[in-house]
Length: 283
Image (cartoon, rainbow, N blue to C red; front, side, top):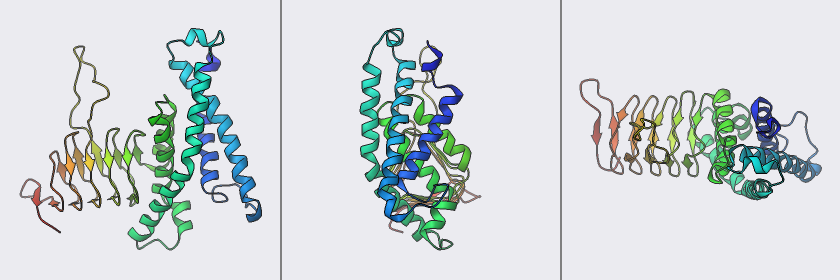
């Protein structure tokens, strides 16, 4: 394989640059090195989108060629990966307005869910959650398009910067908020509904791994829990298993270890004298 077609460390840095271009287009003036003239906002966004499109297309093509079964043919003029990279890039850019709408709802959820917040700019510039969820919502588009490597680089970059580990495959609904955030882990096949709030140290993980006849983990199976709408999960809670569903409107208390489903409007608490207690019925 031609080394120039692989991503490598330089490619990782380019993925980080791509994140910067996309964030600058989503929130013009917020993440730029210098202020921008409000009258030139449209021009600024257009410039960032062009830079993002050019870089994304090149990176995606390299990632595709690196895993393509026709990799040897790619050096001889195969254009399949280039065409797919262009299509995926178009999909990513077309998704940006919807991502911006989702992020506006996430910011509002943070503002309404944390009495310490004074204004929107404080959330954008100082809350690790908004950086993590912005990168996740971008990475998830590429993951859904089956782009290799790049979504994971994006999610691990966010993890390193924020302490929040969200796999790009996780499906996260509207008005999501992680308060404080450090130590949160959200696995690949997790689904999260609307208006869900997590606190620090929450794990939405796998209970165990199915193994094939060679002892290797089976890929592509449901391993992580489903969290329905309007659920609150407090600090240190661990919820495991692909068949575990937390019903809408439930509250999961701090340090709870949960490996089974609970019905809507449940309250689960961690009593040191007992196993976790589920109080069913409307809270």
